[in-house]
Amino acid sequence: MAHGKAGWDEDNLRALFDDETVLPIKNIPRWDIEQEDSWVWLKISFGEFTVKLAYKVYTTSPLKAEAKAILWASLVASNSNMETICVESDSKLCIDALRCKIEDSPWCIHSCCAAVFKNMFSCGNINNIGFPFWGGIRPDGCGHRGLELNCDKNNVTIIKIRDVTYSILNVNLNTQMLTITREDYLSGFCSPNFVNTTLDPTLFDFSLGYQNLTLAYGCALSSVALPGQLTCSSSSGLFDVHMELGAHGPENCNRSVVIPVPSNQSVDTLTWAKLEQSIKEGFDVKLKVDTSACSSCMGSKGVCGYDQKLNQSTCYRSQAKPPDKPGTFTKLSQIEREL
Image (cartoon, rainbow, N blue to C red; front, top):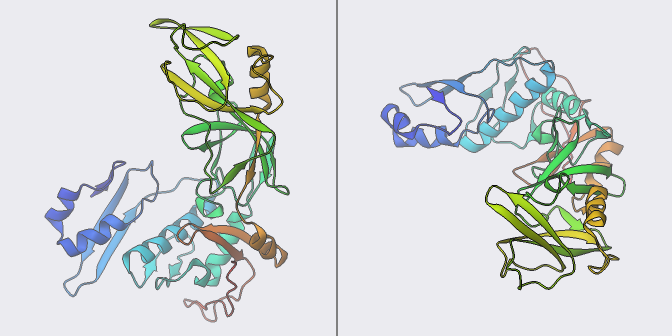
């Protein structure tokens, strides 16, 4: 049966399998959220349950596709209490998962993942970005789930934080500082995404030297006594935009958006042209992801990844002991857990 983008058709599943079987099927994670996958199910009389996924991968990065299949299969095993997961691929890998951590996987999986995770993200003027970020040619196991980078149609690196898309102007991994700007305000003030500039507190902090500025839209004429206002046009007519220091709700206005501006700005001297320039220059945020374990990992010739289930960094090493015999796998003798 097919797994559509909306998920499993539970009615069809329950028509084919008992409740005990339906639950593990529903727990299987999507291979690719944009892929209409085809699946084959088989439950043998003595209880063995077999799942086959039909999905051809056309890629210029076969190593990346293979690593993605391996990580996906390991997650299936962990979520569904399956003792063994086999991944049929060009190298005919068989993963002895046993609900183990990815660090306990056979040596060849470590080698494959380490080779893929060495790939760096590059787009426009942002180049060679690695841990804790992922995106592009770096699969999601390369970095924190909330730190996905993308390259837009204008070859600009973007990141989405709390439903707001930001262009990344600069990244300094040594200081863990990013300079970002709201993409919706780069083309003007009249049609933004009406969401305040708030960061994920588990991942980012605002740098020092910034204050809040509220842009209020569609205010009653007498409700806000401010020297500066901007008139915008829309399909329903004209409306005014006012600026006010601090974080305020819409009050007598239709909507409001809070954005950061430099602390040395005064609303008395802040013109719309100056505000536009300030937005184009962006603002600085500091990453709160602990990368000390990653430094230790790289110091021992490892490659950093991120365990999404345990919410902590992971170390992959490409130099490991090969199988003792063809067809069997030897677990790494010593597994270093990066805390």
